[in-house]
Length: 66
Image (tube, rainbow, N blue to C red; front, side, top):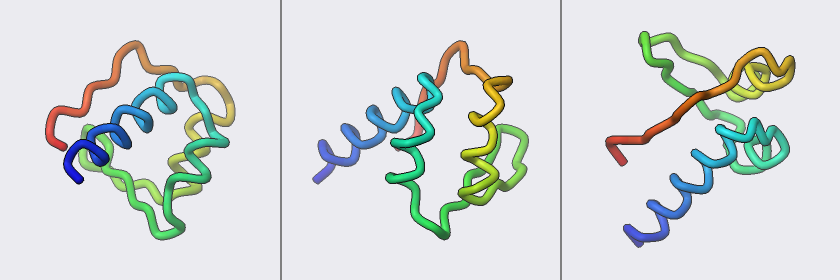
């Protein structure tokens, strides 16, 4: 089970880096809440919206507490 979670986290990270809104829309639950690096909260639509304009791009993305 732990390996499945790690694979999912790796897949999600890769999708975030690519800005793959289709994958993220499928994988995130309707009640998803993301917590930004400064503590702000984003619901699913707000999280996806970050990728819509193409203005937000990651240089790196690391999950260090899975």
